[in-house]
Amino acid sequence: MSPPQGNRLGQAWLAIAFCVCIAACATPATTGIPSARDAQAAMAIGKSTKADVEAALGKAIVVSFDSGYEVWIYREKSAAAGLGLFGQPTQERPELVLLFEPAGTLKKTRVRGPAS
Amino acid sequence: MSAAPTLKMLSWVTAAAIAWLWGVAHAQLQDGAVKKLPPVTVTATATRGAVEKSYRKMIAGMDLFERMHSLAPAASLRYKLLPRQPGTEMDRIELEVLGDTVAIPVRVAADHTFTLERDSKAAAENAAVTPNRRAQSMTWRVDIRTPGLPPNTRRLGDMRLECLVGNEAGLISNPKPFIGHLARAFSSFVDYCNQEEPEYLFFADRPLFSVVMVNGTRRVTLPVDRLYAGASADPGLKSALPYCDCEVLVDRTYYLPLGDKSWPDDTLIEFEYMEDANVAAAR
Image (cartoon, rainbow over all chains, first blue to last red; front, side, top):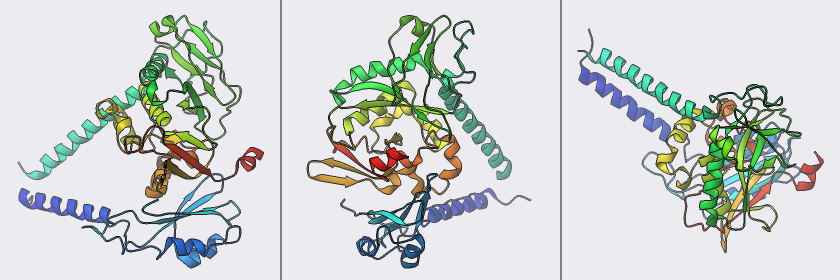
C-alpha cells in the first residue's frame, strides 16, 4: 500500500531542506587558520616543504597540475567576519595561497585579504 | 492515482526534457561538424574528423568586433588556436577555409594566431575553417590586444570584447559540460558576457600564480576560486576536465568579472606567473 501523498511530499521537502543545509555547510567557515599573514610570515621560500606546511597549518585545499606544480589554499577562520544563516561566512575570508614546485619545496606565497 | 507513479512519470518527463535540451545544445555546438563535408577534389590537406569552426560565425564575430570596437579602440582582432589534448603538435598547422568549391589557405603565425579574409563565396557555401588536426585536439579563442601595454598585463576592455566576439563566433567553453552546454544554448538570451561573473575561460600566456585588477589606486586580487577553472571550489572538476577545452591549460585559466561596470575598460589585468619568463622559455 502506498503511503499518503501528503506524507511523500513532506518527506521530499525534508530531503530538500536537508540537502540545502548540507550544501551550505559543506565548507564550514569555522575551520581554517587563525591568520593568513602570520602563517605566510612563518613560511620560508625555497626551504619549507609540503610536510612542513601541513604539520604547521593542517590539510590544505590542493590543486595539482600535470607540470608537477601544486597550489595549496588555506582560508582564515571567519569568526571576525561573522556567519550567515547556514554557517557560511558573511564576507570573503582572507586566503593564503602557496605554490610548491615539482620538487616539493615552497616557491611562492601570497595573501588575499577581504579588501585586496 | 497514488503519488509514486506520478512522481515516476514526472521524473521520466524531466529526464526526457533534459535530454532534449542537451541534444539541442549539443547540436548547436556541433554546428560546424554536421555541415556538408567538402569534396576530396578540393584539397588533399583536410583532416577527417578535424576540429573545425563555422566560417560564417567567425565572420559574424569579425562584424561584431567592428561594431563594438570602442571597447578596444587601439586593438586589432586575431583568432587563436590552443592545444586541447596532451601531445598536440602546435607547430606547422595548416589551416584552410573549405567550402564545396572554395579552398582558401590561411596563414597561421608563430604564436598560433590568424586572421580570416572575407570571401562571399565561402560564406555562401557555408564553409568551415579547418586545421589539419583531429577534432578535440585543439581549441579556439579570440585574441584582442591593445599594443604598448606594460609587460605581463592585459586590458579589461580587450577581454570584454574577446568574450563578446568569442560568443558570436561560437568559441565559448565551460569546464562543466552539461551546465556549459545549457549556458551556451541560452547565452543569446542572457547576454552572457555582461553577467557580473561569466564563466568565460581566459587563457594566460603561461601558468598563473595570481591575477590582479588595477585601476588607479584600486587593486583587487582575484579569489583563487576564479583561477584554474575554479578547481579549488570544485573537487569534481578533474573528472569533468576531458569535456573542457581547458584540459591541458588549466594552470593558465582565469575568469574575469566582465559585467562589473565599476571596472572601466582601461583597467589593467596584471599577471604573476608560476615561473619567470626566462625559466619558462628554457623549458
